Image (tube, rainbow, N blue to C red):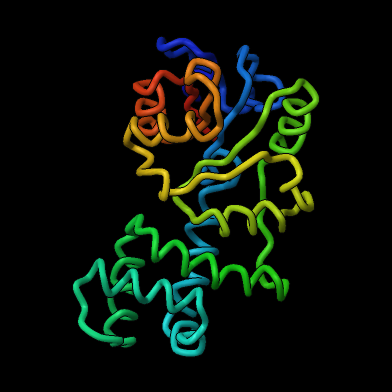
Amino acid sequence: MANSNTLSDSPVNHPVSDFNLHTAITADVDAIVTDIEGTTTDLRFVRDTLFPYARERLASFVREHADSPDVARVLEQVAHLAGLRGADIEASIAKLIAWSDADEKITALKALQGLIWNAGYRDGALRAPVYPDVAPALKRWRTNGIRTYVYSSGSIAAQQLLFAHTIEGDLTPLFDGYFDTTSGGKLSADSYRTIASAIGLLPARLLFLSDHAGEVAAAREAGWLAVQVVRP
């Protein structure tokens, strides 16, 4: 059974096979903000494909591109966060690997993963699956004048890459904007207040979709409408 796909705080269960973004979300809102992992895209793709892909290439990628502005910026952030002295690339790599293995939601790590995934998407090694109802739902919402955004712990660059290289083609034209942890952590109500301000809408006119109950609770605390999406 799936959690409610209605907008009430009281759960109304539906069979998982009945859940469909294309028809389930009927809220009177001006914008919908969606999570990625477990909401638009199977969690297993992120967990079993993207993360291992970046982890296996992390050390060599940093060594090879240490002088590039993007990687240099990541290394500077790592040194600051980890209290490292000087430009110790190997110490920064070790810290990044430790964060990756612990699945830490650290912006510098997410930025580096995005750079590695960028290379994989561009050479055709990676292509992102999305649930069958995602593209039709996005098109329907936009036809109805509802703006659509992404809020994920992955970097904005990584979000854009994923939706630009899906099995359904390039879905980025269906989104109005993207948010990541630079707006704050996903379990903090303040993050949703920040995003509402950036979008320029009252929280009550925004709907957040996520598979994570804690994120849904944080959005509701900030005054948003929110639905927990439970996939098979």
